[in-house]
Each structure stands twice: as structure tokens, then as C-alpha cells.
Length: 175
Image (cartoon, rainbow, N blue to C red):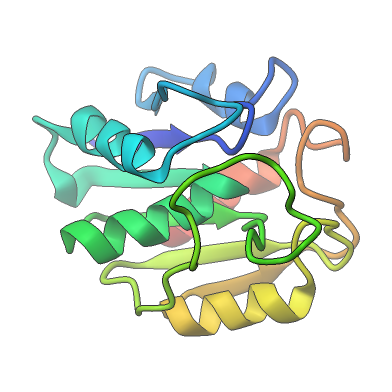
């Protein structure tokens, strides 16, 4: 049985966010809680992933990341070199750009190593936190399939992505 681990971005994902709807859709979805959501430390977030996955068969684990969570998955893959079933990386924030002025520690530079498991990057053509060119660059570097869903903003509740059946369908690409 596949276990899905949700990795929200900065500030966590609120009640109307698609990640929360995924979490509430079945017992196989688990949100990884972090110590600090608003001024995150990469080391803490990496340790949060490690702790959450302890005891699970990694061959049956899929990570579902949004925004800063995507960079966290890239860091986790680079640090731990573990093989999981896959990861859905939605709206990866380009935290190296000046527009990203939120307090965070240790997330830059964004790892550009090939990720050692199957990944799908989902991007929007009008995301204020990452250009399509940078999303494509990340996908190419990480060895990910890129899915462009058009003008979808930051693919969050504010841009209309609460219940997101197409997102659940994208999970099927990961096995």
C-alpha cells in the first residue's frame, strides 16, 4: 500500500488548500508537521521528513510537496540518497530570487542534483514565485517530468486549488 506524505511550504497549507483536501481523502495520506512554519530552517525540515518516514517501507512512499516543500525534497534527496516510490513537486518556489523575501535558513542554494527517484514537477505559467523557465530548469536538473497546467497562479487555495481532482490524477504517474 502506498503511503503519501504531504510536505507543505512556508506557512503550512490551510484548510482550503489542495494538500489539506488530499490529507482528508484517506488514511494513506499523512502531513509532515514541522517545528517552524513561518521562519523555517532547512535542517529542521529535513529532520522532520526523516522522522516521519521512519518505519515505513520506502518503496511504498510518495512525497507530495508544495512551494518551499519542493526545495526541501531536493535537499532531502541530496542529503540522504534514499530511494522512494516518487514525489509530486507542485509549484516549486524559486527561493533564490529577490521576490522571495520570507525568512528562511539553509534552503539556498537549491540543489540541482538529479533526484534518485521518480519525480513530477507541476508548474503554472503565471506563478509569482517561480517563472516557467526556472520550473523547467529545476525539472531538467532533477530529472523530473514537467507538467505545465497553464495559468494557475501558485497552485494554492488563493488561486482556486482547493479540491483538486486533477492533482490526485497526477499522483498516478508515480505508480
